Structures are given as structure tokens and as C-alpha cells.
Amino acid sequence: EDAAFNAIDREAPQEADVPPTAKHKRVKVIPRGQQQLQLAQDKVIIHKQAALGKDDDKNVLDAPVAVNGVDDNAGEMGKPVVLPKEMAPDMKKAVDEGWTNNAFNQYVSDLISVHRSLPDPRDAWCKDSARYLSNLPKTDVIICFHNEAWSVLLRTVHSVLDRSPSELIGEIILVDDYSDMTHLKKKLEDYFADYPMVKIVRGPQREGLIRARLLGAKYAKSPVITYLDSHCECAEGWLEPLLDRIARNSTTVVCPVIDVIDDATLEFHYRDSSGVNVGGFDWNLQFSWHSVPEREKKRHNSTSEPVYSPTMAGGLFSIDREFFERLGTYDSGFDIWGGENLELSFKTWMCGGTLEIVPCSHVGHIFRKRSPYKWRTGVNVLKKNSVRLAEVWMDDYSKYYYQRIGMDKGDFGDVSDRKKLREDLQCKSFQWYLDTIYPELFIPGNAVANGEIRNLGYGGRTCLDSPSGKRNLKKAVGLYPCHKQGGNQIRNINTNMCLDAMLKNEDESPVGVYECHGQGGHQYWMLSKAGEIRRDQACLDYAGKDVILFGCHGSRGNQFWQYRENTKLLHHGSSGKCLAINESRDKLIMEECDASHLRQHWVLENYDSS
Ligand code: LR7
Ligand code: MN
Image (cartoon, rainbow, N blue to C red; front, side):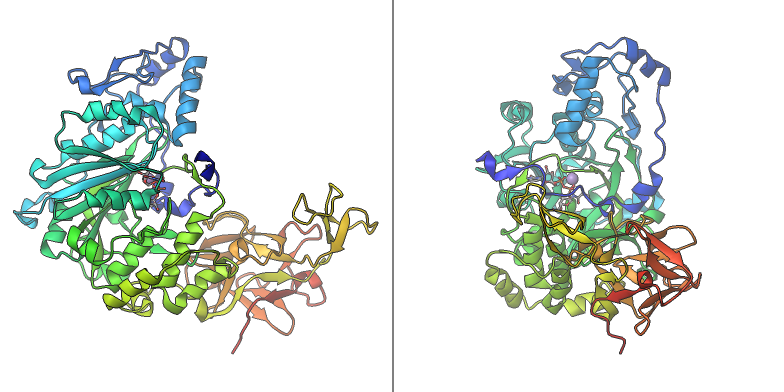
């Protein structure tokens, strides 16, 4: 049955997955005990059984751990652990394997106590216990995992046990989503055998994180359910502020601030309360972070107060169990990964609830740059999940997502039950949600043009070429300069170049050109009434050097473009120049406007100047 999975269906998480402060704050790691670590280069002793927590033999890890030179306090107080650049071959091999299997530095994690300490993140406002109701409801904590690293999973569980008032925890339910790593079998059961609070539930087959969470919820008995990813660390006082919000109003769904545990050093970076972000999304239905909007700031006296958030990141939240059930939990048709966070966010708001981020509550999460585990083969699960989401919850706004996927919804299964749920609950419209909860979101329908931006210069120069000579369009077809000698070149195709974001939808990445592919994606642009050429939150920006994408600022200048339909020129605001492509068709250039150059001519899809 393993054939049903492969490792590549998912792109590495977009930069947007990493909270902006993490990206900007990624400070150079402090080489702690540098001299000692240097020693480790020459003399590496790998102990088979290294007691990391000394007195507590629950901490014995039998992975190859403690290295000479890394002291017993490795990682305490959330500090980074830095391995030497040069490593003995055995050690290097172990480090590399850890990265391969987990997409984070498992080796470093194994050096750190599963009970490691963290600095207390709370300010005086948060620490004032009078702010919280005295009889808070209990929560079950559900942690789903598929092939999680031993020390990381244990640290997640211990951080809950060590830093929550025990009377507030019902059970910790570990849901094994059909892992095959051996340490997650009997060894895990043995480890938790004398922890009555910890229960292990195993799925009968690979379900993906959404159905794994639903399986866990079946075992939940406490009034509140709290979900955590399997690579988290809860900080001091994380739980009370969450439960307090639910105790006051059972339709409030709450998320902690998600701090960043560095994937390489396991350093725990706190995000200060001025840096709290709220969740949003773009029309690719990708989650994104934003600073708290002004309208929301006005509702508060302190930056420590819970803030409304249009969406949640997905993995870390608490919800009243009955409210979760009333909302129809998750759509069990969602597979493996993705989209469930938006589903729950939309329906929380649309069906009478409130979604908040609670700045006093801090939980760290290891953000990874790729997905280490196998996804399903032959289906784009993320797209399927997103289409189900759009069909049920987004009304006519679903079309903006469909435009991004070339209008190809694929087979998304049956959603009639979910539509009925929405009707039965008499949820509000998506329009209401956008107007009231997420007015910051740019609506493509308000754009003057949307779709590809096609250049007319140097067109028709590329031919479809089958190097194998087999003329099989599906196989080994490439684009090559036309040589007009027939042979392997099948036909001239219309290959104009299109404006292409090339990389991720990321700030400051250079924009380029690529053969128009008509699939949306990186070639999807919107011209706003305000003269921006947008990709959701990012705008085409020219400051005299490269044409780049930069966060939209709404004040024209370097982001102001005027399209003249009669000349087909794209005039740039601050420079007065026009956008063009170079002769080798691999670059955007800015030059003096001259309508006689075809290379300056652009056609904007769905252009409507009225
Ligand atoms: O098939 C699977 N079965 C599982 O049980 C795949 C995953 N999982 C488990 C996995 O072991 C982990 O504990 O599910 C959890 C989430 O998977 P990750 O850690 O690979 O996902 P992520 O952290 O990249 O994904 C974020 O988006 C997901 C969308 O479906 C989920 O909502 C994750 O919970 C979510 N993580 C967070 O919200 C943490 C903050 C990230 C941000 C922003
Ligand atoms: Mn995660």
C-alpha cells in the first residue's frame, strides 16, 4: 500500500508559512560554548545511552546522542545548539540522516533534554492571575503524528505536562497516523506506560492529519479540545489564557502565539507582543501572516489582549468540544495536509463564533522548509482539499481560486453533506466574512485586469520539440528555438513571454518572464484601480534596479503602473519608464517609452477599463 504515497507532491512550505518576524529575526545563532564545540571536531564520542536528564531515567534516549563537548545543559532556556562545521564521519552521517528523515536537525534535538527549560514569555499583564476565571474547564490535548522524531515528540508531550496545571488537563491523546518508524511502536507505549494521562491511539491506515485529528477527537471527553503539532514546546502559562477565553464564551476559538523553534539549532525564538500577527489568506488559498490591522488595535487597551484573527495557522488551537461538533468538526474528505485551517476559520466566523490569537499564550513550533513524509501519489491533495473548501464556503468568491488553478477543479468528491451542514447552521455569507472580518483582503473582482500579462515582443520564436523524435506530445517535449528544419520540431506554438513571478510569492524576489503557460500560478497578476500590479499582498515594484515583488504599500511611487490600452505600453510611475523584455527573452527591462518597440507591448488578460 506504500505505492499510494510518494514524497514529492507538496512544494516546500511557502515562505508565508513562516511568521514574518521569524524570517526577519533569524539572527545569527550564538555559538554557545564555542571552544567546547570545537573540541568535538577532533574527538567525537557517541554514547549509545546518554542520560540527558540525569536523575530521570525517562530521559534516556537510545539514539546516538551526547557528543563530547556538548554539555548537559544543551538547549536549556531555549538556547541554540550549534554543531561544529567539521564533523567526524560517523557524526556527520547521523546528522545528515536526522535532516533527511525529519527536515529538521534531529541530531541536535536528541542532545537537548525533553524537559528543557524556556524563558517565561509573559509580561506583567499576562501574569496577573486575576485576569483569568478561577474555575477553568479541562482540556484534552490531541497530538497527531506521522513519523515524528522521538525526542521532539517527547519534548512536545513533556512541555504540556511540565507547564500546565495538572487539573486543567484531561488526557493527552497521541494519535499515530500510521507511522512506520520503530521508535513509535512498542517503545513509545512502554515509555508512557506509567503516565495515566497519556493515551496512544493508532489509526488503521494512513489518514492524513485531518482525519487523524478527527480520530483523536472521538476519544476526547473534556469540555475543551486543544490540538498541537507533534513538534511543539508549550511555554510557561500557555494554557490558562486560552481556556479563559473559552470559559467566557464557548464559541470563541483560540490560538496561542506560535513562536519559532529553529529547525537547525532548536533555538526557541519568542515573538514579543508588539510583533503579534494575525492570520489571513490569499486567493491561492494559502495561509499568510499580517500585522494587527488598525481597526483591531483600536479595540484594545493593551497589546496583550486577545485579537481577532481572520484565519488560524491550523495546528495549534483550543476549541470548545461541543462547539467544534456543532460546526461539523472538519470535513473528513480532506486528505493528508492543508486547507483544514481555512475551513475551520471560515466557518467559525460565518457560523456564529469568534477566532482569536491570545498574545499571553506562547507555544513554539518547528517550522520546516519541506515536508519530510510521503504524500499521496497521483492526487494533488492540497488542491482537492482547497476545492472542497471553496465549493462549500466561498460562494461566488470561489471563482478567484479557480482562476488560480486554471479553472481545473479536478475530482473533489462529494460535498453535499458539507453544504447541508452550512445550511442547517444558517451560516453567514462569504461576502459578509470578507466585508466584516477580513476587509484588508484585495478582491480580484475589483481589479481592472486579472490573469496573465503577455508581452508581444520577439514572439513565436520557440518550437515544440521532441528530442526523442517520437512525436509523442506527452513525452519529453521541450521548447527549443525554431530551426525551421522540421525533424523533431512538431509545430510552431504561440510562445509569447509572460510576466512571471518566477519564485515564491515572496517579498523582494525578482520578477522575470517565462513562456506564457495559461495556468495561472506565477503568471497570475491583477491590475488594481489604484494602479498596482498585484499578486495578492505583493506588488510589482521598480526602484531603479530590478523589477521586484514587494509588499503592497498603497502609496503609488515605485508601485504605480499605468496601462495605456491604445499603445499597449505599461508606464511606470516614479521613473516614467516603460516595462519591456530583453532580446534574449529572459529578463525584464525598463526603458524609455517608445510605442514602436513591440518589446514594450503588453496585453493584459480580462482588461476592463470601464
Ligand atoms: O499525514 C499526516 N499525518 C499527520 O498526522 C501528515 C501530518 N501529520 C501530523 C504531523 O506529524 C504534524 O504533527 O500533522 C501535523 C502537521 O503536519 P506538519 O507539521 O507537517 O505541517 P505544518 O506545520 O507544515 O502545517 C501547518 O498547516 C497544516 C495544514 O494542514 C496543519 O494545519 C498544521 O497543523 C499546521 N501547523 C501549524 O499551524 C503550526 C504553525 C505553522 C504555521 C504557519
Ligand atoms: Mn508542524
